[in-house]
Length: 475
Image 1 (cartoon, one colour):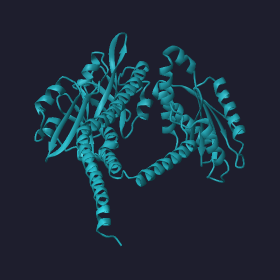
Image 2 (cartoon, helix red, strand yellow):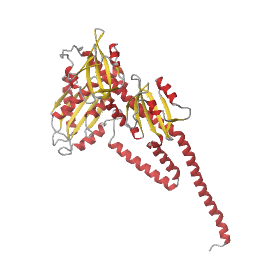
Image 3 (spheres, rainbow, N blue to C red):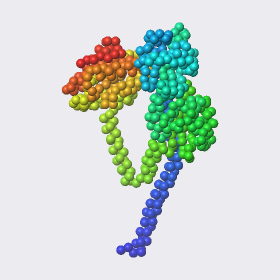
Image 4 (cartoon, helix red, strand yellow):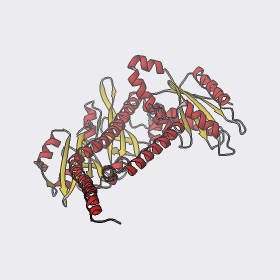
């Protein structure tokens, strides 16, 4: 039984413990208050870094698209007959092959009449891009409303020059809808939008999150600007062709807009996000806040155990699906495990063909242009092989400039040959790569990984001996 002396003895301890608890709670609240203030300051900076990264991806996509298409057009123009209206020119078959839903190839004469693969003609003599071609300039047009089969589109054009005179033009019309798909597929499209506009402000192509306005200035004219920023200030920056970062408010909600020149005519790319809806940043805030609030020993131990569990899980996943750091395809070690397991399947649940690929004259590329160019070629090879195969197929960087492709689930000799032809065609279109491919089929009960690989390697050397830039099949 506790008497008054005992009570007086325990009261300071109880008050001390109560004071300690109150102090801890007050400290946590103060730390969170300070933390949220710092987060508010850093939110814009972090968002800027993320949308800059996303905008750079769009910029790279546009530059790669136009550069690769213009390079291909220049090659086409170098061997094409100038149009004479006879219908017997050397390029008709190739023009017809390039009649697609998203693009089409045309050849114009020096009077401005353009010929398409379906033998239709049109007068482009008044087009600005054609006038530049007559001056010997390759160029990319502005957005042409209804210019591509009734759709908005752009035109990439290069001159056909003979005896130092422009005799015509090779023109590739490209649907703006294809670029819109890329803009809509951006991770930012959930929290904002991307679009392309000119230095005059005309919106050329936009993702679905953009209001249907003719110009970017019309889009922003009713917005609220703070901290010394203004729409007129943006006009001046855009007019000068410089990059810029803008913060504005719509219905008191913060918006962030980043824009930068593309280096293609007077195009500029832009990305905007709603700061309050920027999910990845908010998730970081929630995670850090949870760390401040749950600072007890028990929660710390749980967090450590969770981190260790995650690290253990990630380590197992990395061992199971290790990728080549440069090309993004599987390494030899990982591929051996995956394919060896896949060869144990039956019917359509196993690998049915192996392709061994070697880049022709890759050493010459390294010696002539340097290893950086060689690395870029290897990256492009990985991208093309991924594009020409399915997710269930296994692509392997076997070593150096050698790649291996294991085709899964189908049957028949013609299918791997068609895939090999598609790969070679994609390499040829790229203008940078030629390769030789060896193909071997996998028997229904065959599961010797090394033996199959050896046959494919022998087929590769058959292709090399036949003259390179082709494929060979060894049964």
